[in-house]
Amino acid sequence: MEKKEYKVVGVMSGTSLDGIDLVFAEFQFDNVWNFNIVIAETVEYEAKWQNILKHLVANSLTELKEIDADYTTYLAGVINSFIKRNDIKNIDAVCSHGHTALHQPKKKLTYQIGNMPFLASLLNKKVVCDFRVQDVELGGQGAPLVPIGDKLLFSDYDFCLNLGGFANISTEFEGNRIAYDICPVNIVLNYYVRLLGFNYDDEGKIASTGVVNNQLLDTLNNLEFYKLKHPKSLGLEWVDKNIFPLIDVFQLDVKDVLKTFVEHIAIQLAVEINRKNKASVYVTGGGAYNKYLINRLKTYTKNKIIEPSKTIVEFKEALIFGFLGVLKMNNEINCLQSVTGASKNHSSGNIFLP
Image (tube, rainbow, N blue to C red; front, side, top):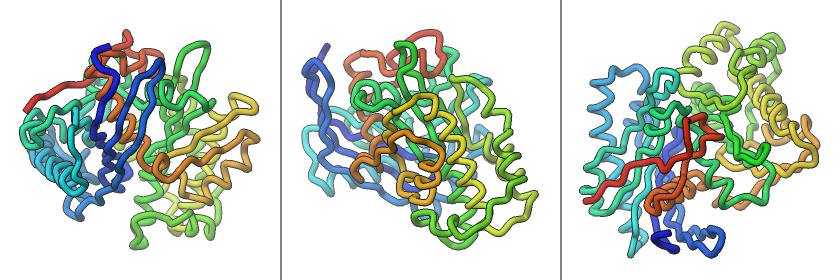
């Protein structure tokens, strides 16, 4: 092991478009890895960028590369402001996920914008980034990547369940860490609630006033993806093709769409966490604040739902992408074959110097 202590900035932008999550975290190794989140912030996207990111899949590869250059510059500005605003010193690296533009692992294609080499020069810092591409090249799904952090930092829990743009879960199975995407969450809920002029459905209050459309619910629950075994992952393209057109055919009021889709999410989550009895389920991501969703989930399971501190709920993914960078700098495995389906465990990502 090259080093046992690191100070890094972890950066994550998720498909729910809530904003850019940034953490300044310290990691120490003393037989096991420990962490401390010193500072954590979310920087909301400007309307311009929210609109661009919302429609990324409509762009050609050439257009995406142009957007990538602009986004990398924009991201550097956000990160630099975070560092200066908080007077952060002695950073070993900035470890960034970027923002997913394309994710089609069957075609050996995944593309996260914001990972261009000149990011290091703009920040004048070592940058560790672009964690998904190598895994896809090795035949993996390129997702989810957070489970190595679940395994090494949050091993006390039977399941780690993240409710972001998509729901993903990780757990130990027959001596290996496995993880996979379950279903869309905020990427769908936020899309429909924006039709009412809101960025999100606060605590699920709007959804709670709706009526479940059982025909739509049955159709959603019978989608082919839910019959697949892990490893498996979802992307925006899948939602555009399989979810939005299906829902829109029913021409429902937004509150009824929200209620029906929350019910769908709760059912699909319960299918997965009920694979173990008397299990602890550690819930993070923006969806953890959707009280209506969490209450619906509790009606479908007897397992213990644990909601951690607000900082962990909101910034666990940014924290773990910081940790992926630490593992990469130590040349340690940060991507698990048992999770993604790649041909081998590996240390993924690129290291760029200023």
